[in-house]
Image 1 (spheres, one colour):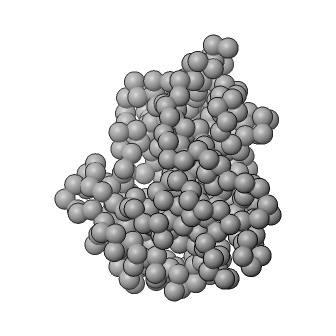
Image 2 (cartoon, helix red, strand yellow; image 1 turned 180 degrees about the vertical axis):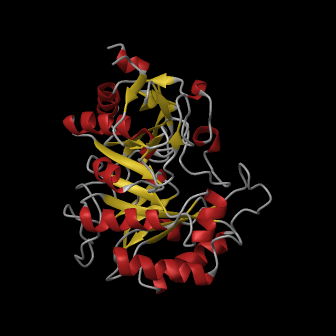
Length: 363
């Protein structure tokens, strides 16, 4: 395998009409020779389904883990983040549309073999590598290869995903992940169909799967769009589903929308909307609910669900307080806080640092 290239894939089947069906996600693209799936990176070439972007990335950057967002997974630590191009949903509000909606291979300006990514992460002091910016399920084979290389060096991996994936590839993909943030875009089939050209049910299946059939630590994010997915009724329904199916301890992030891509006519999400959503979710029983994309120290910090003590203080992506013992229990009352914690928090802070993987490949 060269530094970057085209590789054969496993999840596809032949149809009677001569086309090939991609079986990675519920979209089930049916392709004639030379055609690409909606995701752009999976294509039919030489009578098989291939991934055209193995080893290629739109760029690498060190982020705070809280930016993924993950608040209960190695707080304060740096994560080496990267994405590719394309996506298997068509969200009109996409906040990373220049990457996820790209149909240009020139977007993929950086290249690295899996072992180079893992080595770079370790040498840069990153506790994890995140597949983010666009959905890693569409470059599943490369993500898995990177995850294997990371695991061999003691580096953890994080999937930032919409969870729109079929059963068999889902089991393989998450079998190599340590953590995930799943984008629950709304709690309405109509929203998924009309705004994302997708379906809600497979995403709920993925969330149930993560909870009941894996050891992957996961959190949820919902981008609240005024008038589209932020009604009290929808938030109550979603909260009740989360409590019943995932339990009270799954962290849930409500993030503010800003006009972008094809949804420019909608106003920014008022901070009060996030506070209202957080209040509804907590009233319905979700213990750890956060606000994002706004300055809200109370909505970004973690408190003990038993005694109410501040256990992880946050100001944007900077940790301002730490009251967890080495076993991840509240320093005030001893109640365990759900998550993956180390004896001490990281000190990376809010920095964002671009990285050239070529510097590590040359060594």
